[in-house]
Image 1 (cartoon, one colour):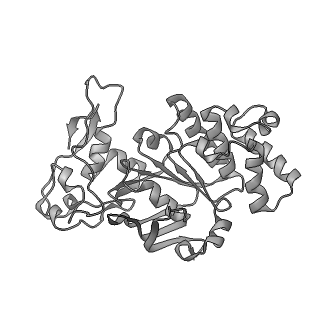
Image 2 (cartoon, helix red, strand yellow):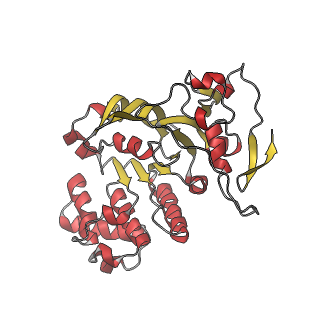
Image 3 (tube, one colour):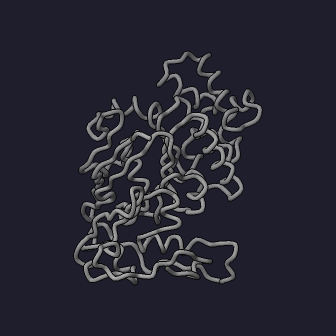
Length: 341
């Protein structure tokens, strides 16, 4: 598969009263045609900011300091806002976490779907209405003719999220960015939305960047996984690489805190401590202060990305040829290590 999106050395800073904060720090990855790349990590690690910077919808105090976002042989970092308006929605669409804040409560659902079709595809109102009704049906909502005329408050949370997905897909985008699209929904509806996204991807061939902190969701939708910590991607690989052969201690911790049905313990494992302040990022490996397996070098030199395989890389000094061999967990049960290498 060829690369549809290439991000190289991306840095995003926020200006605050206390000083500048590097929220995204030297991030590089590719998105291939037709694949789903999940970006996972704790809240505040930079996942959403990273994806908002791709389509340049950062808040006023945020800006791209360095790097490239290559799409269709064009660096989006250098494009004007007017050019980006022609790309957003048409080529790259985004689904946000809370569907209620994504929809205008004073405009009917049908008109909100039509708006994108008219603007980006130049369709007349009759053609746009026909397409909007088709999309309402496509995302699994019954009686689309009736629903077309209704307003957001007349829909449940899950149905509103389906409408947001319909709007995002209205112009057949090449890339769909889903920013925690199931977080505000109950577990049953979450499963329905994930299933819907997978089915729509099969029908349309759209490439997906899926942002989440839920590793259970990742297992059901992703082809590849990028793990973020403190504004950086610290491990990336195929789904099987990350779940069955994790290399970074932070990834071990995330997988260790994943509950299982077999668990009989009252408590789940949790990663000790808190992420560092990015106002004054630590020297060396940002995860060192929370890592019981940290080496001396972790406290004064940042690790590079070490290649584990052709599909798998991780930024940890434990992968250096001279590093001591650490017994890492390969199977966890309710957060408790039950088997070691």
